[in-house]
Image (cartoon, rainbow, N blue to C red; front, side):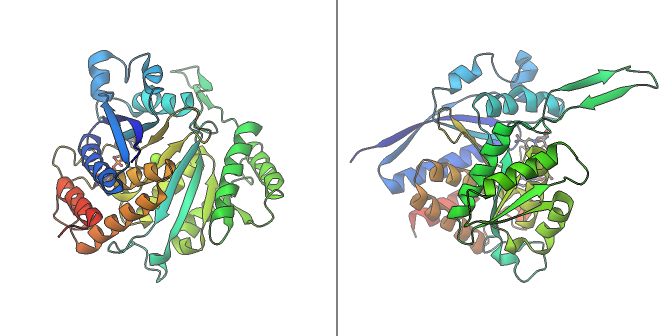
Length: 358
Ligand code: NAI
Ligand code: MG
């Protein structure tokens, strides 16, 4: 049989990233074994805050060139208490996301059997939607500055910018996803009452693109009201599209309603596949529990499932999600979900269910 081979750059990063990435790689290899015609060739890179403390940079200058030889990047998390968060974010994640035009950040929100949502709603078990977050511009911009520092006139300015090209492409991606979803619904986050230049522009482009998708029922909602909607009626959502900042905030809320931030998966996608796409869970490096072997690996494993979907192995991806769910139902879970299992034991259980071994 013919082997489909993929080159995967592994960047475990810091803290629990170094624990959940190896666990998820074991699961990925088990999935490849189950498939029979799939192989992942890994190369590990130590780029992280620890690397920064030693070398003065999060990753080497030619990092993007090195990574461009890979189809996939599988990342844990970066962040370390002694390195400011803006250094780690702007020194590694943002250069990779932007350099490789990973302008779609995809974050599924789904409740799984075996994990009660903290929401009391009887429909909490039916939550199943995806957030499409703009990942290349918007509020997360390096434009702006500080002036009159140390004086009473001290001022900080941060410019957010919305380009027609980027707004159109993220909205179109979201409409495409909604058109393929069962209920064909798209919710767009706005804040055009308070933010009076960029957000009315976002809404206008949304109206224009909506005309191309007559089958999709779409609405816009102010992001504050949408935050409440995430808590009160999340089962009504199908696809949500949001700017960089709004999407970031909404998806932490999304992770919370799933039961633990340790479960939420994410992908940074270059839809044209001209550059590698990067798969990394929503959670960070969790320094408060790092080094104890108790981090929940489900977020990283579910992220691996998104990687399988991305390379066209949706059937295998669905089997992996079933194995995750079976593990959760069995109660073999980490302390964040009220269990006593270790990271490795959870990964073992997922592999066990995936391969169907007794
Ligand atoms: P965090 O996600 O690391 O932790 C928040 C809380 O959730 C902590 O109590 C942590 O123990 C818990 N938690 C997170 N993941 C878990 C898992 N897999 N299993 C069990 N519990 C888990 O967010 P926080 O504390 O705001 O940030 C910590 C560091 O991570 C910071 O340096 C931050 O900049 C960085 N960070 C990095 C991200 C990335 O690499 N994409 C994303 C978010 C934060
Ligand atoms: Mg976030």
